[in-house]
Amino acid sequence: MSIAPDHFALYGTHARETPPVRLTAGKLSVDLSNGNLRSITYDGVEVLRAISYLVRDRDWGTYNPDLTDLDILPRDGVFTVAYSACYAGPAGTELTVRVSISGDASGSLTFSADALSSTGFETNRCGFCILHPIVGLAGSPVTVAYVDGRSEETCLPDLIEPWQPFQNMRAITHTVLPGVVAECRMDGDTFEMEDQRNWSDASYKTYVRPLALPWPYTIEPSQTVAQAVTLTVRDHRPSASAPVKKSSAASVVITHGSKTGTFPKIGLIITPEEAKSTLRQAALLAQVAPQELLFHFDPLAGHNADCFIDFAAISRLHTGTITLEIALACQQPLTDETVEIAEWMQSARFRPNAVVISPDVDRQSTPPGSTWPECPPLEEVYAAARNAFPGIRLGGGMLSYFTELNRKRVPADNLDFISHCTNPIVHAADDLSVMQTLEALPFITRSVREIYGDKPYRIGPSTIPMRQNPYGSRTLDNPGDRRIAMASTDPRHNGFFAAAFAMAYASGTLDAGLECLTLSALTGPFGLVAGRNEPTPEGEARPLLRIVHALAGLAGRTWKQCISSDPTRLLCFEAQVSETSSLWLINITAEPVTVDLTEWAGSDHCRAGVLILAPFSTEQIARV
Image 1 (cartoon, one colour):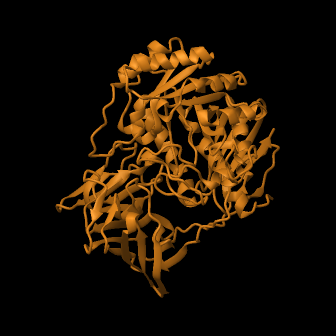
Image 2: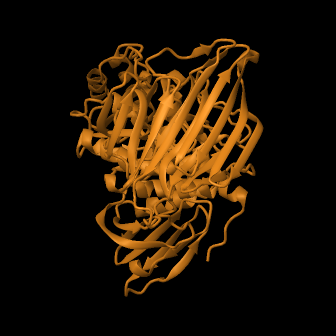
């Protein structure tokens, strides 16, 4: 039996999330968390992932309100909640939102909010976001009601939709389970839906205020903004129908699947800012033995010829392949810019095996309704790169996230591979939301394969901290080591949480047939060990080190699918090395998980039976 580490070891911070308050009315159940509703279930089945009232700043950061006058009243068959949420904006501006929530045993849930500012308040979005889950719902039938009174029988997107699948919405209805349907109605404004799997969120998000309207905008002084969301669950089953609730304490059963493939190469990202720190960790680089080093170069960030001196020194320590990632400024003729970089490389004797190139401007997202920024045709960018870097592989795609790749699909015929990143804290940064993003990964990779076929495919760097914000002017500082969206550092990167997340990420992308997966740097805020000028002493190993080292050791080996009876708690895969196989188990929850290996073990000699896996832990079980 594994021993659970303490809270700091798990999360890299002593700060604890406030546990939600479970509210129940008949078969309806919700979790009240920081004033919003999560895990909305009926008869134990998830109906909605969340109903939240959110206020965003001009960089799409989410304000954290002060809640006052909180009143929670549960009683037989009914629950009610009331509170005030106070938001502090720049230059002394303020916004107060008065909230009322009620639910009853009939399956009705209402969440209403009245927002009022005495000063005026600037925001990119102020109002409700409703999240539908994706697992079990993707591609399924829904009925959408529109603000003009029309109604449409349609389906939720299966492959990830780059733009809003539904606009001008008033309500959406879906089947929860046979005989049970749920209608979600939104009043007070015009709503639309976006496919949040673009950002690796595990949800379809219906939100207020169409993106085609200008933002930021101002809520005028003394102008009340009233909105409401009403969920109505209709249960048409016979009253004797057996409940479908699952016990969270039940053992997770592991069985064999039918899929198999090859583990990808494992890469590390190296920036000019971390190059010298990486050189000081030469022994660690040799120990981890990644197959790929991905060097980042951005002239608009002040990177110049000197960077390649350090890059060349690092590359001489490495026995695998090397890729240079270029955010091309596109401010001079493309030939001039690319040839200059090539000359700097040659002068430093830095010789990559591949170049990934993308215009710097494409790192910023272009939301629906916005004007695309000026950018040279990608065909011309790739042609200039081919000319400047002859004889090496050329990659394209996006240096940001799948969202941008899905919305601006690159001409891939003359590319040798496609690449993009993901980030789990674009919209939310609580522990549950971060781990739930893992559900979106198979949808992302399947969508990429649908667009680009069998083109060699790479992902990364993909880390919990955000390295660049495509949706605002900057990533957010995090001096208090909090859980905040769009932050350049995240305390969980230091803990077992990040180790479990990384191994689960690798598990969730195995079916994509990736050429390379990059999950970290060697040093620094994205590193396997801390760099200089960090709260953690330089060189101190993070739990993530063991995971990346293990994955690098599996590169090129055969994996076999294993199936978890509850992938919301535990993920798994089997690795084949020569005549020996090993089962990797990944607990992605904060609670111990009991695992039943009897069916997986069969009659073979291995560690069979039942074991208990500690929170956010990974365990390897060998079988000969």
